[in-house]
Image 1: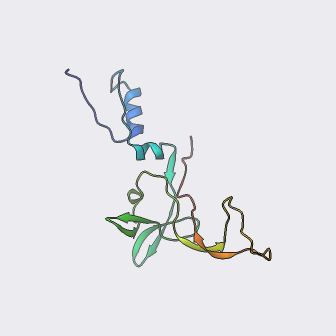
Image 2: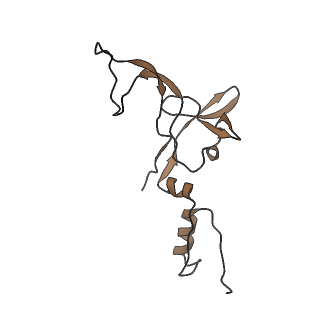
Image 3: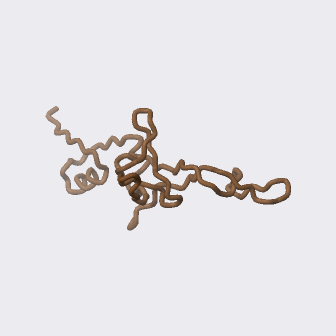
Length: 131
């Protein structure tokens, strides 16, 4: 009754406001599942490349464009906001040695490494520095 409500879309800002006493002693934070998965200790990683005149976010491991789903269509990410709040992995197909379930190089019946097209699967996130 007569309680003041404040809506904040940023966990860090919520914590700062709480520490300053702006939210009172019984502040409650409701964090969306996707935000909680990313947490404040992680950030997206990518490189920017100009492809067809458009600055596109690309995997820093393989250099392929990072793709997202927009209304059911796969399109290249052009801004960090496109990547959302989840930790992503690169889905681009790259040529390289085939890997087994444990991440080791697969070998054929003659003991030679198997070469194939496979998913890059490099993490598109890293731990935020200074934590």
